[in-house]
Length: 145
Image (tube, rainbow, N blue to C red; front, side, top):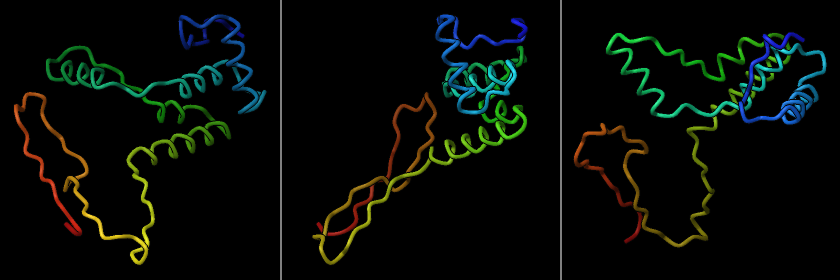
């Protein structure tokens, strides 16, 4: 294994922690992985979602003609891993992304439940500029009073 091709996941991780991570990945995805594949999988699994600040810096640099920020997400990293392991990672990312915007719905039997008054925002999502002083949000009431 060439030490120059390996990507360090975290500077704070000890050699024992890196070895544990390596064995965990090899147990999950197969022992025949290369060091580069293991490091990419570790990056994907341990990647944190990008913060608003990262997107903001990239947008500011884009507007002012500064150096372009490379925003590589876990999905594009998983596409670079080849074979069966890459497919499993892509499926895992799709499942993870599909659950982001979902809401749980509890079934309701109208015969056994009492009439309720439901107060909620009319729109489930709002996009507001940071410099907006005040915002009007429409609230709706449904059902019995």
